[in-house]
Amino acid sequence: MALAPALPAAGLPAQTAGSGAHDVWAWAGPLLGLLIGAALGLAWGVRHRRARNALARQLQATSTDASLQDERLQAARSERDRMAERLQQQAVEFGRQAHEDGLTGLPNSRAFEEGFAHHFARSKRHGQALCLLLLDVDHFQQINDNWSHAVGDAVLKEAARLLRGVCRTSDLPARLDGDGFAVLLTDTDLEGGKRFSQRLHVAFAGYRGWRQADEAGPNYVTFSAGLVQLGDEDQAPAQLRQRAERALYLARHAGGNHTSLG
Image 1 (cartoon, rainbow, N blue to C red):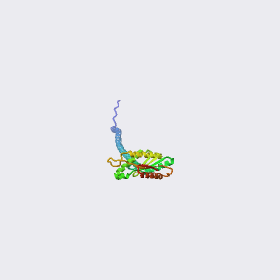
Image 2 (image 1 turned 120 degrees about the horizontal axis):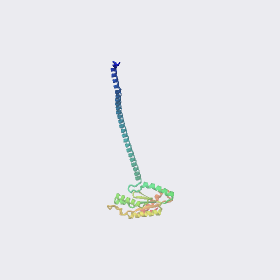
Image 3 (image 1 turned 90 degrees about the vertical axis):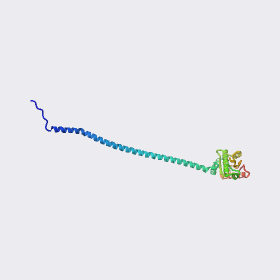
Image 4 (image 1 turned 120 degrees about the vertical axis):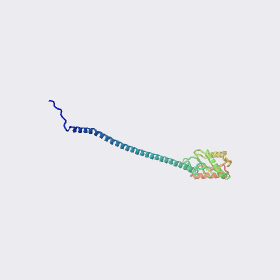
């Protein structure tokens, strides 16, 4: 006997509907989770980019500040170095001015006294010859009175140039004051000193540039000198110099253009 197909129970349609809703949530739930996760990830990404950009700007500002500070530091160091160089140049210039005659460029009286003391002690210690020559330009006051002090200054400059030209590099020429000059002749005995003095007299006599371009000035210039050699009786530089000054006095009162020995 054939069985009739079973009819669905009365509550079956409701179970089928509930099963469909469950199926919807089964795939909608994960999707919603993905969407929420994506939204959260997007929000986190935005915040991260903002924080990263803010950090980059902060690092850039810090780098810029550091660069500016480095530039300021370099500028300060450069200025310090330039100032140190200027101070060194000024010290050298002040030292030069303190030991150089401003008119002739020769060592001045201070430099001469220092060199005189050094060479005197050296010659005494080692038994080396040393000569001192003191000289004055003859009739210098008349040159100033007949022409001018400017002409007199020009004469002194030329006299200093001629004196330097006759000296060796080991000698010490100097302008003491006014028209007075001095020369220390190292490792030179009296005969060598006389030859030096003679060469200087010849240089003065042969020079033709005493007169200025405007015809002002003397046609010729001469000098008087006193020459001495370091001796056993000289126990201090002042004693050697006093003997040279006495010899110079004799040369001037002998009519000038002459070197007297002391």
